[in-house]
Length: 379
Image 1 (cartoon, rainbow, N blue to C red):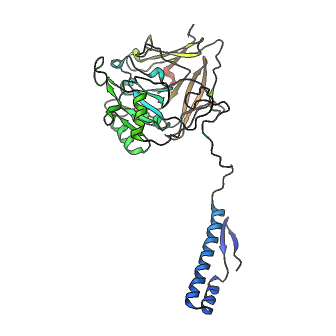
Image 2 (tube, rainbow, N blue to C red):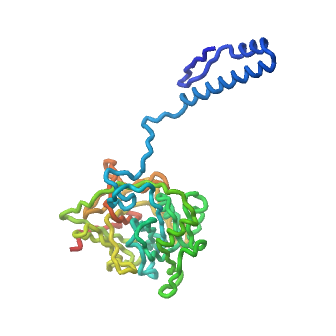
Image 3 (tube, rainbow, N blue to C red):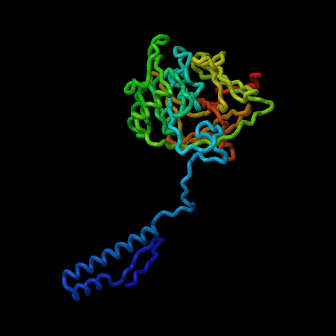
């Protein structure tokens, strides 16, 4: 028999003429046990042929070769999270820690934000902003991070894009339900892992006195046993400071108190933005000021969802954003197709914006009309 292929509406079929007749003839000429053996061999041969043909005909074809490369490779080896130049790209992506930090005035001064490689600031109840601050296993130790506060659902989407260990103290009902249901958040709740947190009862009162550290978070990895993380990595560049016409942004949080409003002043000598909250230079418990190499102000839909004033934020899709780096402003588009994708920024012609190496601070607002700009600088 000579199997041949027939093409019917773009699909390939096997056509083996008189197969049944051939099998019957064999059965008549042979003893029953011998017939069974021959039939078994024929069945195996036909089955193998069908498998081979279907495997090669129906298997999806890729127009590009499949190449396994680290997602963070660039022409110049850089740290996958900070963009700082390094000798060689690491064999694995470092584990990220995402820590909820509050910003109500009872919590001041805050701790650890100046050591985070990324901070995302967004409003919670009363339009008072709250932070999700990002650290990584292996960075220089941060001895005190906090006060650590409760989860909100939209912060999960930012934590999960890093496959991060998400540290918090309880959360809103929607956030806790999302953690239980989404299957992607690496939950690290002080209510259940209290040995990795402590309460500073000497200088604070509850609920504004819970803290953790990178040492505690790193040691917790032995308990939670996460696999190697997987996340997208930004493109990075070296600083290219402007020579004049510097732009410094400010944000009105509409919280009813100007003490939460934020102003970023460009420091031309250091090519960084220095954060002011209210009228004061924003400092943390170490006495250091907070600065960033990139400031992004992202516009999205923000709605109130309950009588307590809790918010719902759209974190996926795309929208308008302003990027400030090197003293200059870039009008751009933010994109995050699905909740576990890395948030990225693009120019009007679709090119991804390379971020300055160092620290990035992202402000999330309901409208870019809350942003004002000035040419003021730190000299």
